Image 1 (cartoon, rainbow, N blue to C red):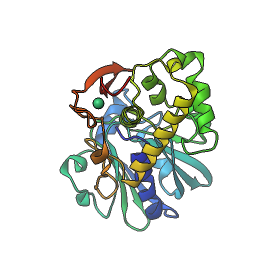
Image 2 (cartoon, protein in one colour):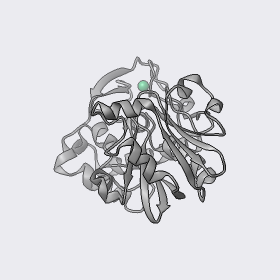
Image 3 (cartoon, rainbow, N blue to C red):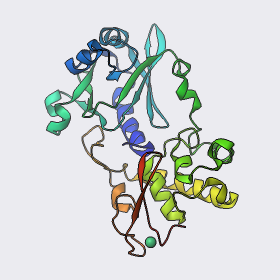
Image 4 (tube, protein in one colour):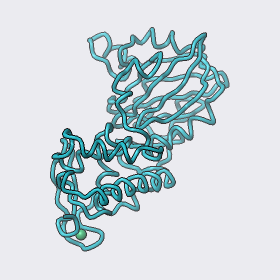
Length: 289
Ligand SMILES: [Zn+2]
């Protein structure tokens, strides 16, 4: 699942090719329409396909930003509004002159939303597993979970926020891994980067948050921010279906010390897996205490 660095990579690529452009038309796949007709809400949340087309057609793209793992596209059509997108498990954007130019067949076959821009190019959203989300909002406040997200991990005050949340009754007795994967504690850190940060810090993923000193918590927070930045530099991690808008993928996975490993990359011990917050957590029983 794309985490903060992968989403940042997508945003940095969409921004220069789309800002200032106008969306001249919008296409929505038959799969989404059928899902709507059967009462489900695949990808388009709380908006009908026709309304979605109507709202976005003719709008100008003013800004493309990342907030945690979400992409915020500020649009203007008379008034400003937001298109908020979450990539889910396998969402990917492609900037192409034709859908045939999308690099891999598996992505080409699962294009669900196509925005045609006034320069003739397309921004196409492909989503193989359809866990991605798009919402059209007047402001963030129209989707309250967005307001509960922790500050950006590189922003002033993010560490104080993290300490306050981690030491709150809600998380104090929870495994540290569960706390750092929660978007209300730290923004944008999912299973991959939580696994790597705990490995670097030699902390067992199940250790109760309250059993980690404040000094170590601060170091852990710094390790997470550092790994997220490293991964942004590396173009993100290529895990299953993550691709950037040219269909390329990042190289952070080559630097993993623990995620997806069968043996510890430091001591060679066989790794173990525990389930935490319904995600498989890999760790080294010798190095991580
Ligand atoms: Zn080890």
